[in-house]
Length: 113
Image 1 (cartoon, rainbow, N blue to C red):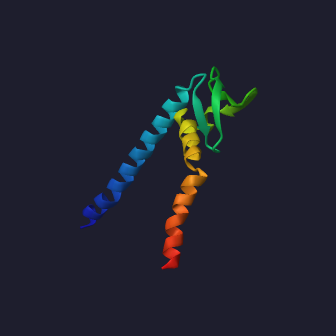
Image 2: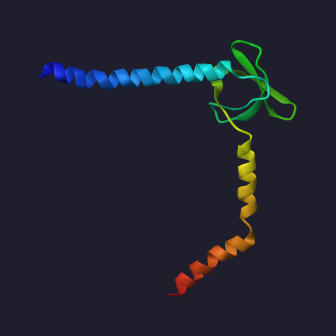
Image 3: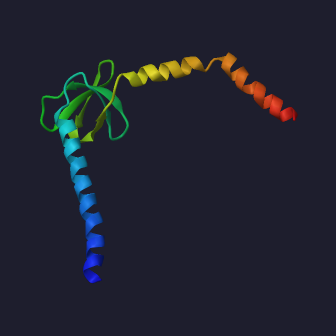
């Protein structure tokens, strides 16, 4: 009975350690593959474009036109696609006063009941 209990405790520990090791390897690969022009998001949620990735430990990120800041490579969480901006623009265009009125009509109808 005791060996079975050890196995039941050891297997989840082994699997979680393996998953964590794989995630760390993927993060390291991402940070090493960064190149100038890549859109990235930092661990603090700041979006920017890689301006210079020639240093081994730091990376320069342009956060606005002409504003370049230096970050540790470890602070880069993920690469982001430029499509995010396009999706946000189309969502704001869909929120017209006409669509708001169409939404309000059923609510007024339900309130009269």
